[in-house]
Amino acid sequence: MAAITRLHPPSLFSLKSSSSLITRFPSSLYSPRPLRTLSTTAILGSNAQDQVETVEAHGSIVGDLLDYLNESWTHFHATAEAKRQLIDAGFHLLNENDDWDLKPGGRYFFTRNMSCLVAFAVGEKYSAGNGFHVIAAHTDSPCLKLKPRSASTKSGCLMINVQTYGGGLWHTWFDRDLSVAGRVILRDGNGSFIQKLVKVKRPLLRIPTLAIHLDRTVNKDGFKPNVETHLIPLLASKLEETASSETKEKSATTSTKAAHHPLLMQALSDEINCNVDDIVSIELNVCDTQPSCLGGGNNEFIFSGRLDNLASSYCALRALIDSCKSPGDLASEHAIRMVALFDNEEVGSGSIQGAGAPTMFQAMRRIISCLAEKYVGECSFERAVRQSFLVSADMAHGVHPNFMDKHEEYHRPEMQKGLVIKHNANQRYATSGVTSFLFQEIGKIHNLPTQEFVVRNDMGCGSTIGPILASGAGIRTVDCGIAQLSMHSVREICGKEDIDIAYKYFKAFYQTFSSIDSKLIVDSLAL
Image (cartoon, rainbow, N blue to C red):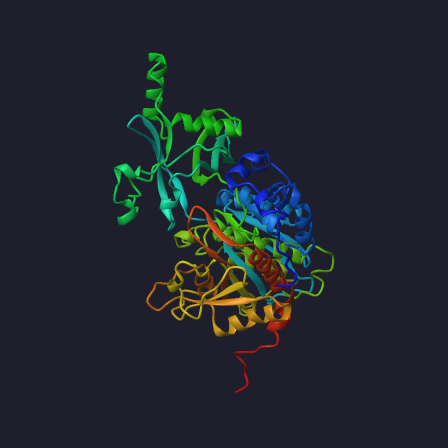
């Protein structure tokens, strides 16, 4: 904690509101940029430069996380940005369809569906059968996704039909400045097709709430929108009556035949600089356009969408990159350091790009086979799994100051107090007494704080990819996360200091777990 410096702006009242921040620097938010264009300096203003330099001198990654969040409107963009940063750091891109040529000391990664990513660094002293030290997280967040036929018209308005993805707090999506982002498939003119990511940066959509004059009991009875009929974004009004009859007839004919409104398709084509007819398929999320930023009286909080779980994903990614970026960082490492970022956790992980698929364990088998100097039997993989350790990193429920009774009395994690280790006797989390002890030893050695969470007995417990991966191949697992509020809202909150603690904890995990693990033997031959 002592190594982490708070950001104190020179004058709290000199800072503008979040709405002013949006209009102050739109170009840096939305144009392609190198890492850190939307930095802590941009968030706080030029007067905070001295404070920013103080934080960066202490190794803070908060500014870089804000960049990552603002770039990563969707799981596709989050994976693409992670890919860019890995390549910039010297990692070699692999293809699952090709043969792999791996070497001790090498750093590699591959993507699947551009929404799942596995990266790893091979210790220079690795030998077949040694373990993998893995941090796993997920790239997806609850959101609204366009239906295959999204075009509809109601009361003279062009509407966009959507599906709910995951367990979102859907009432928070009303009256927000929304847009769309995702990927499209384009016809390239040579008879082939290409994938391209797209992000319409301007506010394009809105889900208006019903005026209180037409819903007098809403504050007493609660806001209970029907997610099928009330959660439909507004795109535009119909064509003006002054338009020519020929124009209206052509537009009506096109709209009848099209799965999506021509106006939406035109916005996509303008963004990616192609003809509308070249777009043959779209896969889009509805996204909030408000940038991620620092907030609170001391700028101690991060206000953002998709903190669950891009905050964990980024801390894990940076920890891996920074733990092996210098010559000699892998010189004495016997294990393989790995990050696995999966898709579809919010809907159960049951997909080819989710943690329910054997992606990570197939990669482990291939790595072992590639690095073996001679033929090795199938027992090498089994021995490697027994010696491996997985950190399942997903955001945790911080205690809410207005709803403290929702937490178990003696397990109330707070923001700014360190990583939260999650326990559940019914195995909704994969943490055991042994894995919790080993993981906490890292914190004790490096003076990094931890907290513990147990759900109340009279409440249901959420879950993570931890139990899925732990049971998939029998890998030792601990579930942990960064405490946050407003989980699954369109706009979430977490503590700035917890980001740096998580990053340092994950980096320390890669650098020191081998030595810690060697000191504890559980399944000994001795009685």
